[in-house]
Length: 89
Image (cartoon, rainbow, N blue to C red; front, side, top):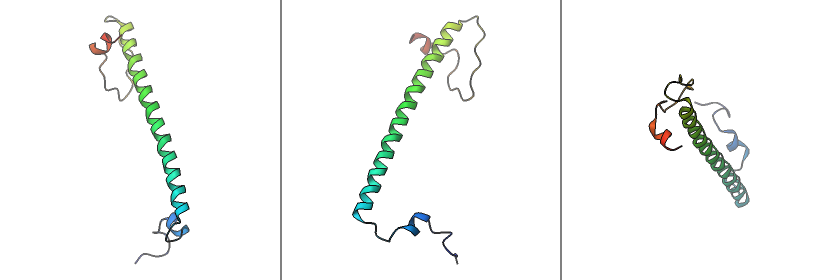
């Protein structure tokens, strides 16, 4: 047997069993706003990834074949000798 309120989520303890229409609409509006903010963050991250990819390709192009490669960051998925990136410059 489970004791006390330790297993009941806090938001269920503090609200009535049936939320009012106004509470539901407020919650929906808050979720839509949060969703929009998250979508904007995702878009910003995608833009930063594209810029990062472009700058890495540009760096490889400037390094040339006889220059030691720059230090690769952990988690890099691309090789430093990618020809497709060099053609895009």
